[in-house]
Length: 483
Image 1 (cartoon, helix red, strand yellow):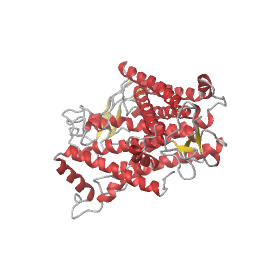
Image 2 (spheres, one colour):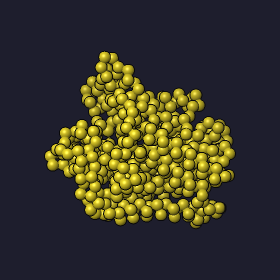
Image 3 (cartoon, one colour):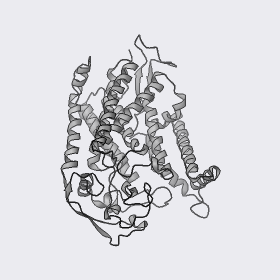
Image 4 (cartoon, one colour):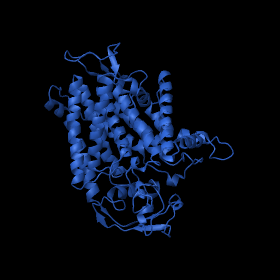
């Protein structure tokens, strides 16, 4: 009978942040099959890794590189300016979903709850601080060979910070809110995790109450130096946004921004939010561009797409990942797991679609309920497809590059997605800063393809292959970065 086995060191000393710990243990499942299922192909030992989770994570980080670096050439795959959902808008939910699956396997059995919680708090803090370092503004990224940040203006929230929050909340649920019920039926399954389900509902209700119930007053902001790069019809350095309402989901007057401005401060928010690509704020919409005539004041206001309130709803995506991991643990056969995953994914997709029709629009910056449902359902479908191909049919060679990247997702994310490595390479140039290996390679491909757009896409594809090769080399040397 196929079952999930997690190899851990004492007291749950594991790290399911962006990837499980590979040295000294890993997420594995027994290859002993039920009588109705054939044994996996190419199985040389009693246990095999859950490769599909590595591939899922590798595809996610590759997708992040694609949309970040090719989004300038293809705005349609870049984040939706405010409402709607694009390819880029699935990346964050995929990360969170994968984290949830990992947590359910890592904390399948907890010997010492207090010790495990202490380790979770420590790792969440390290991940959060790493996110501040990488995305707080200290590294200025590609095409800007400077570094350093005014601490008064450092960005507090970000991608890794949101993952840290989701990891913390989901881990606490898995450590403390699991009943001792033996799972021998669907009812027993629900009973075992009933407290987790209740906690997820409470988090969602809290988000909805604050989003629709908080009164958003008028507020003022100072235009940052980043904003003044673009031509603007707004003359003063200080602008006032007129709100005085509640329940708004529009960019200037929503409760998500209100909470961030109160708790974090205007100067510590992201200074180039996606709504600067809306028609109200850009003549090149859906891309960045100069402000249109008579554009509203809020176009130059800061807003954090990984804010505090929206991160609460984002954590529910981790909770959904927990559920899919629980199915892995308790279901005995491959087809059972696939069936229950699909049965779980379909209602999420339907709810997300219906809520959007009923007036709750998709919005990644707000992480609306409809957006959470549709992206969590898509995460489940993608994980199911990968599991069927990679772990059931054992077709692994075509996805090996993603498997490697998934094993070292944190390395690839920090060096590639956060532009650390490209910025380092660009620091070595010939006579002028434009004559560096990164820019010259991209311009060469653009000339070969006779197209700026397709040349950029080719460059990004080669970039992903390069990082796949780097991750493969690290895998061969058994080097895995963890926190």
